[in-house]
Length: 287
Image (cartoon, rainbow, N blue to C red; front, side, top):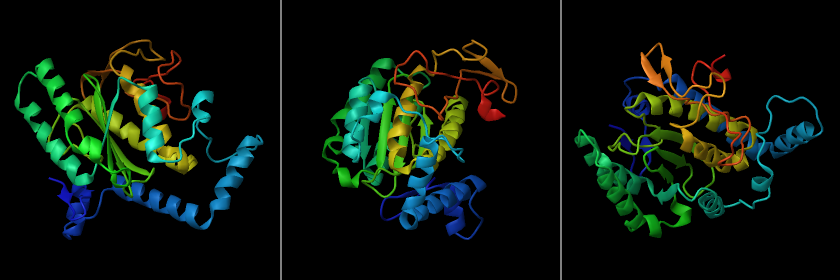
C-alpha cells in the first residue's frame, strides 16, 4: 500500500520504508529525484545556460543532448498553460479520454476501479459503463486547473496512463505509469506498476522518456510526453520497425510481447504512418 500524505501526495512504497527508517529508497527513485532537483535548480539559477545550449544546437554545433524534433504543426501551437496543453491534445487525439484530478480524488477513483479485478472476465459493456461513469463524476468537471495534480489518459481496450504533476496545477510532470484499462486498485498511481508485463515494460521505457524530455526542454516536457504517450494507441497493432513482427518472445519471461518501445528522441505527428515501434530486443535503447 502506498503512503498518502495529508496533502494528498502519494508516496511510493520505497519512500514509505525510508520515512519509517527501515531502508533507503530504490536507485531508480533516487536518480529520478536527483535529476529533477538538478534540473529545477539549473532553471532557477542559470536560465541562460539552457538558451545557450539550444542556440548552439540550432547553429549546428555539437551538444550533449538533441532537442526532440516536433512536427511543424505542433511547434506552432501556443501551449504555455496546462489548460492549453490539454485542450490541444484533446483536439488532436479525440479518441483518447482525458481526465484531471486532485491527488486524493484520484486515489478514490483508482480504488473505485478495483471491482474490475474481481472478475475473471471483464464484460466490455461493463468496462464502457465504468468509463462513462468516470466522465460523469463531479470531479472531472469541477477540478480547478490550478489544483490538477493527476492526469488520466484512457484509450478504451488499449491502455490507461496516469501522469503526476508537481506542483499541482503546473506543467511539470514528475512521474508516469501505464496500466491496462481493466486494472483497478490503490496501486494505480504515477509511481505504481501494472500487474501485466506488457505495461511494466512500457512504464520503464516511459520513465526514461520523461527524464529525457525534462532534461532537454523542461518547459515543453509535459506536452511532448503526452503526445509521445498518444503513439501507444497502436501498442497491440503496430509491427516492429526492425523485425516486422507483431509478437516476439521475451526469453527472460518466456512470454510473447508486442513492440513496447516507441522512440522519444524524435516525435512524429500523432497518427502518422511513420511512427516507429520496437520490441525490447530490437530497440536501440537496449544497447
